[in-house]
Length: 383
Ligand code: CTP
Ligand code: MG
Image (cartoon, rainbow, N blue to C red; front, side, top):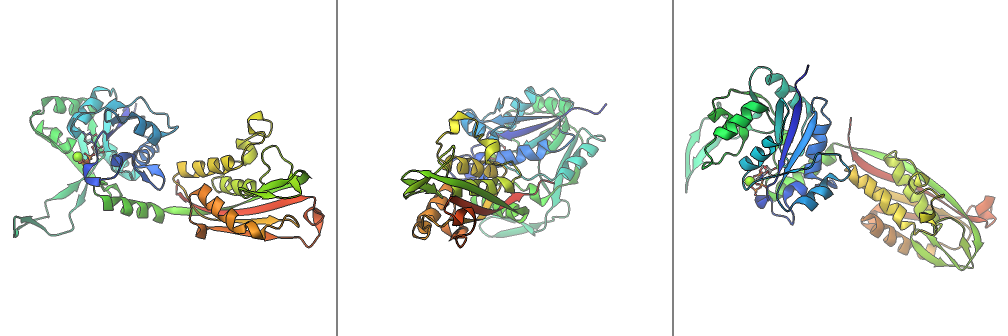
């Protein structure tokens, strides 16, 4: 039988060097918390059976916001130092082997985990390492002597251990001393720690500039998807209608279960299409009385949230309103500004167009208004 493996993610730090309003592990990269990236990477590995997260006291709400709907065991509360946080996590772990990982390393290639678990069959510990490329030297006020780099390596996480062995090593460690990783603690207890090839993707987010680089790394790995949306609403009696989030005074209204905003409906369907997540009726069934007369910006906000939750970003939306009446042109700028606001985008990413159908067809006969939309989003590549 294969040994049971827990991934223990330490996320109890305060992220002092990274600055920012909230600790770095809860800050978003491409709309998704750093911690959530780390969790998803580990959860995606077939050999990881369980995920435990160690958080700081008082970080409960940040944690809940970061994990969203992910099903994860109740978090463990960490300590003042990383070492104490790991020790608390180890006390809550029953698995045969453990991958101890920094939340601040959001990008974890699966092959690193493959190599670690293979090495763990030969020794009680294994860590990912990378060679040092730069010249290394001691520094005081001025440059001191060089340090030979051939025998040096950068040590990353996750670090893999047999759980009993690392737990005993932590227990034996002199609590008066600090350790920045667990391999150090393992070696002090006499455990053999194998090295496997690490990955540049695993670099820790430590300073503010690391976040911009992480955004770029993710953007480069994203795939672009475009989808269409279409909607029609017929005229009824009334004194105005909603198009693209704007109320337009008119001699008639549009009929519909919600506010019948044909423009926002087409746009919402286009956005849902980019993530292959059904259509507006799937999420807001017309049979549900809750959506009677509902303001359609709620539907758009929902689609925007679903894309953000997948780590996606909206690159561009394009909306065409098709009708003989009312005249949309005078409202085009207001619609564009409103949709930009609803999607949290600059107006340069929003295109609003209007056309008639030369008096042909149902829109030409002034029976209603149609709208079609296209949306382009970038999403993290999942497989
Ligand atoms: N960590 C932890 N408990 C602590 C300190 C750190 O769980 N008491 C975690 C951090 O959340 C991070 C990892 O250990 O995921 C690596 O630590 P580091 O990069 O030093 O993070 P911080 O301590 O949060 O940052 P800083 O040192 O800049 O304050
Ligand atoms: Mg620290």
